[in-house]
Image 1 (spheres, rainbow, N blue to C red):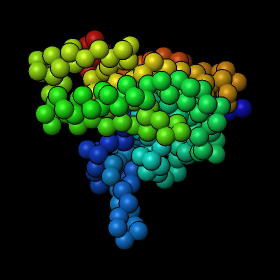
Image 2: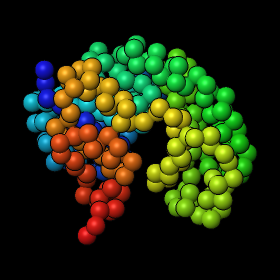
Image 3: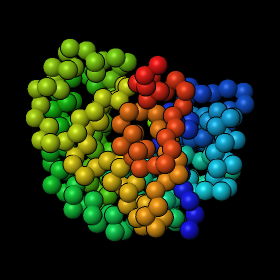
Length: 243
Ligand SMILES: [Mg+2]
């Protein structure tokens, strides 16, 4: 059994803004002519480190990306296709890169009661935010929504107007988190930690990851499963640490 590493993807391993001459393309957008073009980049140093780690350890992505956008991740020389925690833990992909059926059953039962409520949140937020927030339901298992995300302009979610809006709604026990430009509304049971624990139990004999990487305070919930925690210099998580 391999030792393993668990890592968030966006703004931890790669980002749109990290384009540089020696950067490595990490995610791709399909073009109309059937080719693809890079949409975000990994720093060359990170790529050297990750390639070396990936030859010794399993590297398990732990991401909010849904299955489609996770499918656009392709880093040369690094196996990231599975096992993987995607859609904030609503879906787990096995070694074959396909959704794990046992977890699918578990999460379908968990999410079915939330389908109409998430749709209500979506409709309410679309109407109330006057176009300033753009809500979207992230697909989870068996056609059910996994969670709601709503993007807004930089800083908007911290304005008194947005705070008042969020306080107006009864979120019925969902976790409501602002992560940079994004609001995330996660029904109970959806989260990176539980799904990472399931990966640990199923494929790594209960052994925790040697190292966990993430860039947001919310990532700490799964990062703390690991023996070592790491974050990119200058990340949101780094900036929350005491000087
Ligand atoms: Mg991230």
